[in-house]
Amino acid sequence: MFYLPKVRISAPVIALAMYAIASGYLMSLIPLMLTHYGLDTSLASWLASSFYAGLLLGALAIEPLVTRLGHRNGFVWCLGTLITTIAIMPAIPDASVWLLARCVFR
Image (cartoon, rainbow, N blue to C red; front, side, top):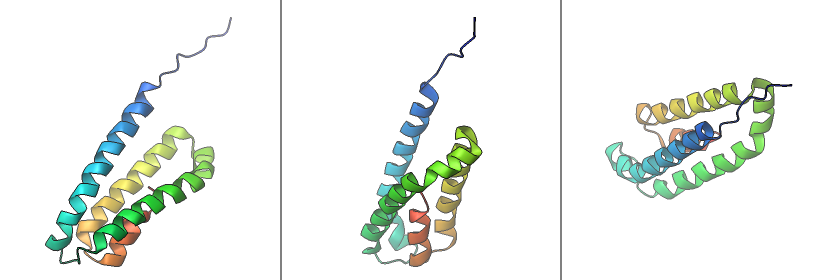
């Protein structure tokens, strides 16, 4: 008889829930951060659009990465990229940098 490991769906569901909460929280903070960093508040809508464009592009382009690295390593790589782009935003208060950081394959 073969031993089949018990499949647990809770870890990815919890991770996605935490990502959704963090994304929503960051999305609500961005308009408040713009004036603090001397950026125009009209940039907020472009940053939101860039974020969702990055989600679409990432969803379309992520399969080769996951195939090559595996699910766990692909998730870690994507999480590291997300953390890096969030850290870059306050470090470099420039509109083009923020737009690129919000778009990077969310």
